[in-house]
Image (cartoon, rainbow, N blue to C red):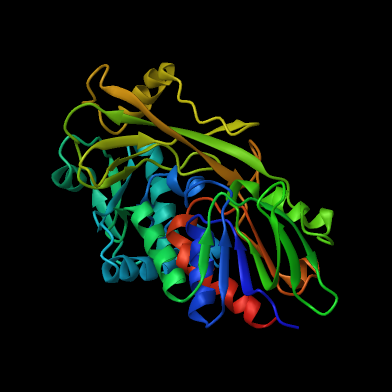
Length: 370
């Protein structure tokens, strides 16, 4: 039978758009659906805009593989599309002797993950690079950076549309039903929405992954992983940015922890922390400034009193709750859920933005066999 589209992607964040681009580059007609009025209004626009080197992730995991491959692809994409970025490098710092073994383990994991250019630094060497930094020792990752994530997503959208595809906003996904001979009937757009047919379907809606999977007829409920909202807030510095490079203390349980970046506008931003919440609440409590000040002074003792102001909050689509081990990305295809032509993505949190182009290619490869 003929279909309205070869492939439909649910979610126009960085990962959904990267999936759409990968499919469009394979010569498919592509539709990307987004419930919000603009692309990238969810997880993709409420993060640190950091390009991760790929240091932290377990050997052979999808996070390790896609972060390193995605980062290499991302720098080339940003340069070719003239999207603003700065490869500033990252220092992972041990602020005291007891943290040295932890950053050494990160170094070894980074080497195993084939992250380029890693180097050990003594405290004096780290302070020579970044005066004012408290570092007993540090790991230098020169491949890390920051970039304009919104400019990146606009470039992805442009490629999809240049290939004849469509990115449609303000159009929430309602439901999908597999057709007997393959493909799907899909309804989107809320009350009175449109119904269309598509041969392939990608569910990449970030925080809505579990809800969307539950709206696909025949998707086994037992194969939908439990989801959790991991909220993190950011504070901005009033005054001159103290460091040129990204500054990361050792990770906290379940996340990379509160770090420093100098954004593309030259301002210093600190965050995120991690608090589990039940709803999409993006408020930032000014009272948290004291907690942030204490944490930041571990690596920047010179932080002036009262210099932090509230900035923004983000929520990460986590597959683990408090105290549980942090799982890998999940790209679930027919072998997992039994539905041909469908890939559902779960738990695409950090380093999902860095990994997005590699995830898109992986999804394209998975669907190429269906």
